[in-house]
Image 1 (cartoon, rainbow, N blue to C red):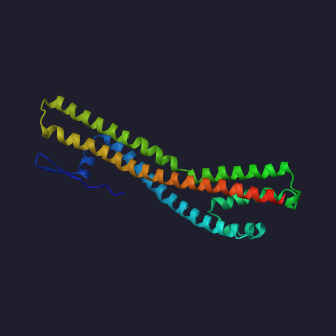
Image 2 (cartoon, rainbow, N blue to C red):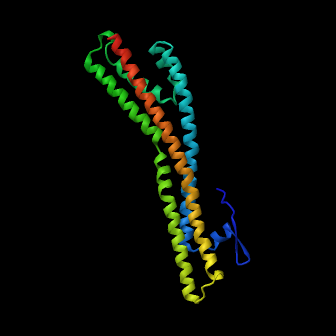
Image 3 (cartoon, rainbow, N blue to C red):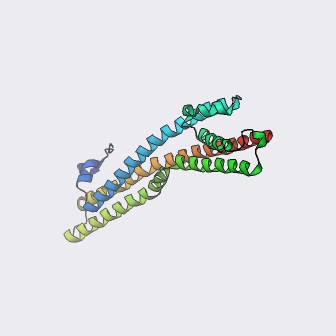
Amino acid sequence: MILFAITTSLVGAQYHAWDLVIHAGPMVKLVLLLLVLASVFCWAIIISKYYVFRDAKRHTALFLDDFYEGNSWDDLFKKMNLFKSAPLAHVFQAGYTELQKGPKKEEELDQPHFENVIRALRRAITSETTRLEKTTYFLATTGATAPFVGLFGTVWGIMNSFQGIGATGVANLAVVAPGISEALIATAMGLAAAIPAVVAYNYFQSGLKVFVSEMENFSHDFTNIIKRNM
């Protein structure tokens, strides 16, 4: 991860962000380390989930085209490998597998077995929702806590600065400024970790709602087709 370089003028000297980190106290360094690790994990999740949602969207479109074209469910079931990233395909697979456990002819399907199909569809929807949601809560947690962790580092650094004033008895800018600058790096790092995490979490939650809505609508269509044939 690239630490952004900021330059501030402090009593005629130039302090770079990396220099401030190196000279920070142990507690501030620990806070910065935690925030950097959280940021790295968040970006790993963001990149991974982006590809998961992209593939799910593409495969879902392909699956719906085949399903509503009127192809037989047997043929569609045999092509599941083509739609392995589509949540709807897994819902269909669960419902169709349960349907095959009943009478061979759909018109002979009884009500208890029809309810089993409905339960299988619901379980599949829950399973797919959990799969898509997995690890995204870490983004929400980071977005909610990182600013406060950074603020803790800032408060700790400022507290050390005031202790330095008490020890030296001098309260001028040359004594206070370096410690405060080190402390403010923690706040900046907290925001740098939190902002992308919050934006990404909201983006993925928005996409998840679309997938859940599609799965529920598909489940209704699936059961309506079975009802018409019963």
